[in-house]
Every structure is written in C-alpha cells, then in structure tokens.
Image (cartoon, rainbow, N blue to C red; front, top):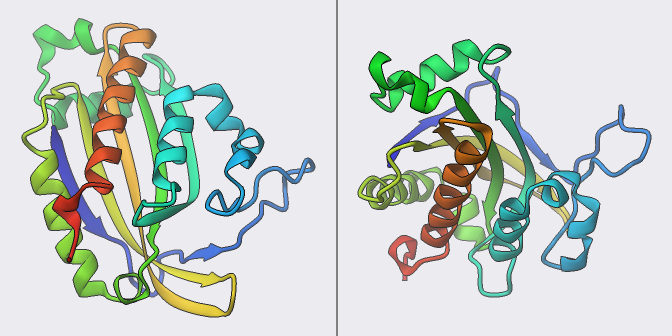
Amino acid sequence: MLAEWSVEASADDPVLVIPWSDPSDPTGDRRFIDLRENPYDLDHIPEAELYPPLMHALRSLNALRSPVFTAKCDAWPLRPKQDADELETLRLNLDIFEDAANDASHGFVSYIDILWRERSIFTSFHQHEQLLHRLTRHAAPLSHPYAMLDCVLRPALVDLTGPQEGFALSLYIKSLGHDPQSAEENWASALDAVVGLVRSKDLSFA
C-alpha cells in the first residue's frame, strides 16, 4: 500500500476544534459525537449508516482499549466524469498506467480525524512524527495495490473538560476499482487494515 504523510500546521492552516458543530445543518446531526461515551450514537452519523465498513472502523477506533478517539469522518465515491482529475492523480500515485486505466476508472475516498487519548502524545509534535513514521512504514508492505493511505498531521484544540492544545491525524484512504463496487471493496479492505495498524502494538510507545 502506498503510504504518505504530511504536516499542515502553519498559521494559515485550519485547527481541528472539538467539540464542533455545523451551523449550516438544520438537523443538528453534523456535530462532534463522543463515541467513547456514547457508542450507540453511531446511528447519528449518516456516513456510518451509509457505509458499514466506516461504521466498523469508528466502532473499533473508539473502543475501550483503543489508543485514539475520532472527531470527524466522511466518505464518498469518485466518479469517472465528475472526478476525472482526482482519479487521474490517484492512478499516477499508484503507478496504474494508461493500459490499465479501464481497471481503475472508479474510486472511493474516506477520511477519519483521530486524536490520541494519552495527553503526553496528544500534545507532542515529535511523538506524532514518530507515530507517522511507524504507521506509514508498517502500512507500506500491506498488499493493497489499488489503495493508498494519506496522513495529515494538523493542530487540534480539545475542550471537553478544559481546553487542551495538541495535534490530530487525518487518515485518508483512497482506492480505485474497475467499477463502483470494486472501488468500495478495495477501500473497505484497506481501511480495515489501517485501523488494525492504528490499534496495534507496532505504534505503541510502551
């Protein structure tokens, strides 16, 4: 699996603020939901209901023994006409050339924002760099040739029991397939593998 990471932490880059809410959403459903405290509130996350692999990932990442919790997520298909440029970029990144383009004409993308529960990790840029090196190193040998992991390290402000400044990771899983179903299947398989890595001892500082 192609695995890359970058940092978006300049003065002009957005900060992930928790809790958050979307003022343009009249239903009030688009908001931070603490799945650690309220695991059954997965029903209030429309993307999780639409895509069961995303629901499974959120449940796993917010489980009692998980080192992280989630803040935001989304998932969407990439269509040949509407998303042609993004699909072409993804094919180039994955070294899928013109003669194989018909086998990769559709795509699927998701992201999940995660934060480390351990305060000493949450507040440390250096430890996040170490985590990203480990995560991408362990993801690279995974056999998912039609998917990639793109990690973005960004600043975060969490104010649940008092304001704390630290960092969050945005985990993007991007996949290709010859039709919408295969693209989604490739995405689901890669997402499951990455979630397993995040929860594994390979990333532990212990």
